[in-house]
Length: 232
Image (cartoon, rainbow, N blue to C red; front, side, top):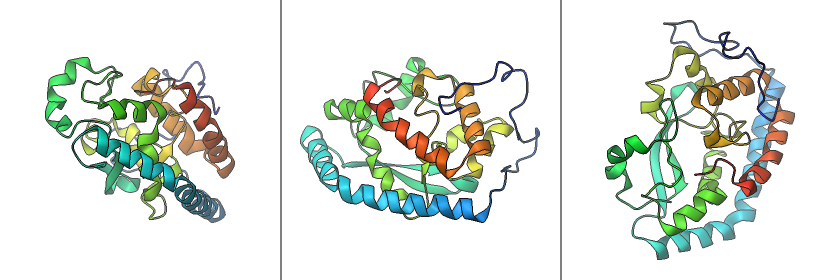
């Protein structure tokens, strides 16, 4: 279901299409070429249109970041995409420029289970950064990754390599498709969803994905952002 609901036995059975223990292969249910090309054409058209329409917002956000704190406008980090290929991931900077140096000091404040690290009131965030996070405006830069094929509009969120190193074998299956700007997790509560449920939502998307499903997730993304449910 698009609302992220699961069957009652989701924890008693292995995820559908999971990779056997010890097998590093990335499993993926093949789709027809017309579905793959349809998704790609939709991604290209929507992302280019979005970049054109939102260009004034890009400029205003960049100006606000520069006036608010020292450091670059964009934050860059290594993420893993389809087939675990690495790429340089861009976001509008929402933290102080020395935020990475403070990371190890904040482990005990982590509010997520599993290998991910998230804090609702992260002390490293700038004033403008808090607003960008709450409104998800820091994510706008990811539209630039779609035309070049590194990301899709909809798909599992791109993980950092250190997180993937801690995945169970079946969880690596989320690397069998292109990562997305939004996903089922994004419209199902984000940080209010446990890591295991998050991974299950990604498996559900991989098994059921279609262009119509992408359209529905995109339509639900704006209301989810406006509600700020699970945002940090």
